[in-house]
Amino acid sequence: MSPKITIIKEVKCTIGTISLRSDKILIFKPFNGVDKWEMKALKEMYHLFMEITGGVPHLYYSDNTNLKSFGAEERAYICSTFHHFALACAIIENSALIRFLTHYMMYLNKPKIPLALFKKEADAILWLKSLKFD
Image 1: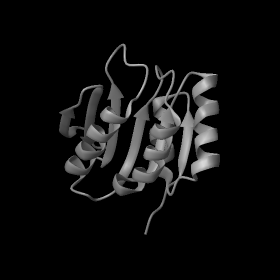
Image 2 (image 1 turned 180 degrees about the horizontal axis):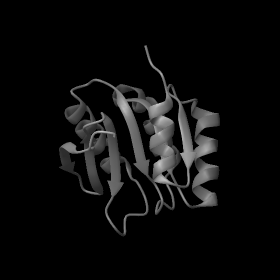
Image 3 (image 1 turned 30 degrees about the vertical axis):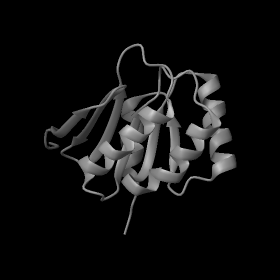
Image 4 (image 1 turned 120 degrees about the vertical axis):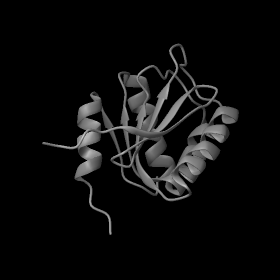
């Protein structure tokens, strides 16, 4: 039997909740109604990610199911900062537009960490746990 997963740290930002689980997976879940990311919120999130992880990269899961848009500046910022707090990133999404934008972002900005898109949270978490890092 697997040990029960608990939340060991949790903080709220202007657009959602950032949690660190006992299995060392960093989670972002936006508040209901949040459908876009702007630079101010991304910079706030970055500082909270760094604080909650102590500057040590973790596996990272982001719930982007309601995300409808984010601009070029936001995409570049995400790609340039991910690796500071994340070893790998699993994103759940339910939109062809977000899938296209994420693949476009990966093509243009070449993330420095593994990144994959999923439809279900369980699949995203399973993928993160399957990765091996030295």
